[in-house]
Length: 290
Image (cartoon, rainbow, N blue to C red; front, side, top):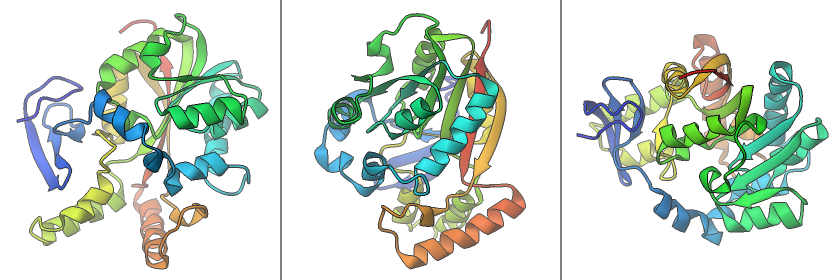
């Protein structure tokens, strides 16, 4: 039985077993997580690999320039709401990749810094985009206490191996009343629900289907309820939660089959009707006490 990394309870239920391990749900706090998380050492091997960082998804960030092509429209949406909650000041982008978001944030008036575990994208961000980027973890960067007015986690929180500890460091370096932004997948989305239904109908044989929902790089899978509970536990108060479609057709720099695009479009449409969309935009403020 896997101990929950969020609430430390030792009661969990198996959701699915895939080639890269077991996915379970904590019966106390409800968080879904990988029974054996990918640790920092293993992540080091994954993210220092050129083959990992040169895949189409990461290259979309490297090549980002056209404001109509993902990830730029999603970055812009997140920044607009962030500016409504907090006027531009010092911003830290945790897991900044090649720095495309930081460039856009600078254009909107933010003074940006970034941290990136992978050496190659961090070097590109510094040398090609002239950005202030630290190679390593946010803990090792050791920023001053209360330094940042906003901290952003774009597709990052699901990668943490010790999210409570990392969030403690993020809280420490955030200014009083600062805003934390998290962009991640909604575990309770209709798309994920359809995947689980097909898995059960296959009598748990379609393990590779479920591997699409539980990427080998991801350790934690939050719903609106569980991420709100997690943030409260770590000293933040949720200010807003918004949702977005998977909308895979907008990733024009990533090769996607027409059948996958069609299926995604249909589920995106249905998701909007039942309010179970695939992406979450979560905004939270640092509280004055835990």
